[in-house]
Amino acid sequence: MPVITPYLAENLLAKPWNQTRNEESAGRAFARLAETAWTPLAGYPGSDVHWLVRCELCGWEGQMFYSHMRRDRVRHRGCLPAAQRPEAIAAWVTRQGQEAGEAADAQRTEAAAVEGEARAAEVDVETRPPKAA
Image 1 (tube, rainbow, N blue to C red):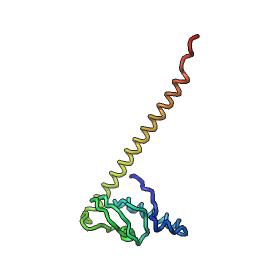
Image 2 (cartoon, helix red, strand yellow):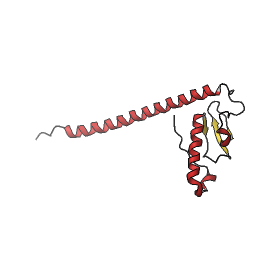
Image 3 (cartoon, rainbow, N blue to C red):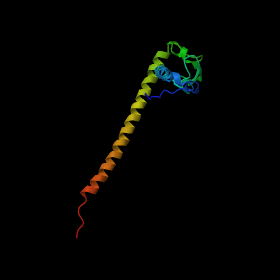
Image 4 (cartoon, rainbow, N blue to C red):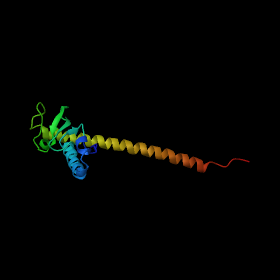
C-alpha cells in the first residue's frame, strides 16, 4: 500500500510547542484513514477540525472531522451501505498492497538494470585487450 507521509496543516504548524504531540496524532490519523479507505487531501488539522478527505470506495470528496472518522461506523451520505463497507475496504486495501508491490518491483528492476549497465561498462573498460604496437 502506498504510504502517505503524515503532515500537518498550517494551523498546527503555527504551534511549535505542541509539535511532537501533533506529529504523533497525525501519524495515527493517517494510518487510520489508510485502513478505512479514506485519503487525506490536506495536512492533518487536528481532531476536532474539518479535514478535506476523499472516500476511496465511491470517490466522494468533502470535509469530515477526524474525531468522527476514528469510529468504525463512519461513512458519508450516498456511499455504500454499512453492510457492504467491510468487504469493499478489504478489497481496496488489497489492491493498494498489490499496486505498491508492483511499483516496488518496477523500481527494483529499474535499479538492477542501471546497476547492471554500470557494471558492464566497468567490465568493458577493464577487459579491453591491449593495443597492438
